[in-house]
Structures are given as structure tokens and as C-alpha cells.
Length: 123
Image (cartoon, rainbow, N blue to C red; front, top):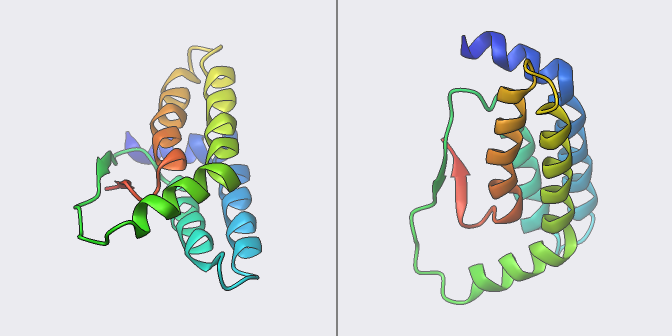
């Protein structure tokens, strides 16, 4: 069932989301400061290709000091809020149909990952 839903996901919105994450990651990687954001964006883009059968879970906390906090704040202001809103709108539109409800729920799940990629991961 996950395979069928993942194929439907790709056809109804997964591919444009993947492309947007990869293009955003490539744009971030043009600068040295943006490389951590680019890597995070590309990793989320890969996870967006097949979200069914996976869960968003908190990352194990590694003692990185304030680096993760600074990265999270910068991510929120540069890309996180926009990507989360894109998932919210896409999820709401997909939930308008009965067939799209599971796909919309996946968008809402991925919204958490798009907002805070340094705190959560898709497993």
C-alpha cells in the first residue's frame, strides 16, 4: 500500500516539492555560509520523494552548543517558513478530495520537517 501511495504522491505533488527543495539547496550551496542549509534542503528533498511508511522523529541531541540554535533561526528566516507554508497550502488543497486526504496528511507531517530540519528527521 505504501508503494501505491508513494507513486500517487509523486504524481500529485511530490515531484514539484522535490525539485523546489533541490533547487533551493543548490542556491544555498552557492555560498560557503549557505552550505549547511543547502545540505539540509537537499536531504529533505530526497525524503519528500517517498514519505509514506516513514515517520518524522526528533533527532538525537548531540552537544553542539548554540550552533544548532543559530542554524535553526537562520533556516526559519531564509527558507523554513516559506517551505512550511507551501506544505500547508498543498496539504489543504489535497485534503479537499477524499483520495487526496492521505497525501494532505503527509504534507502536514513534512511541514514539521520543513520548519525545523535540525531538530527532526524522516525515518
